[in-house]
Length: 363
Image (cartoon, rainbow, N blue to C red):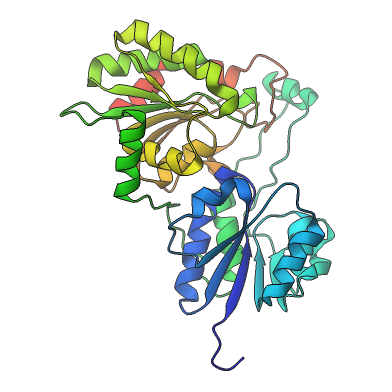
């Protein structure tokens, strides 16, 4: 269309951590297509993440209740010229196909290549994130096998960059980034009582992980680490979490109050996604399990001590963020990628509070 701006629809991924890891690809796509109109199709639950982000012009959302046909009908009315599916799901490829987008780009796994016009081959040095069976885990810990090393090229950031590269974007990695304005930070401070005090920083605790207990460091160790850091650095604590972690946050807040003599601010279940980003930005450090808030904390510029158990920082860690420190215990069966440990959770129970304290003090 002569004189008309190029229109590109990018189908977002579905989870907070993955969405944050996709931001380098979106930033590179904006660099490559500065005159194009970039529209992001996102799950409704992630809408707040994209507010004010300069790498997209518009965000369309869909709810869990909307069918494939309803979403595709809305897309078809917009007559997009190009479409990029970031998820590996069949549905995301079908959405682009049913929307009658002429150029449809994505990975070709599981037969979805039939609905794409350009299938992006896997990146050399990739790694299949396969869950280990209990039998395999027991064999590994008894010395009956050897884990396959995970190459640096396998990180999910590289995967999303490769997909965007099919539309001309650079594959050079960037640190994931989510912009949060100073006025948002000021509003969050006021709403949640996170007042500024000379020489007294705010530190954050994120003791949950939506994926499952195999990603959750024992809550009592978060408390021990927080008490030690409070005494050393004179910091104050704010606790993060979703609606399912309100009780956990309250328990840690009480224990912290007893250990430090000062109550922690428990925000579990109280923040919108946008408020979560702003309050994470308030924090100098965030102690966190591998989770969506871990990625978000690093992306807004906070330093993070990221605790890994059943998953792999080589694949999903905040390794591109200079303020991130990875804390893990090398065991033969990790990463297993399971939600629940079938043995004794040695990957997390082997991490002592002092290791997390040292990660912060050394950073």
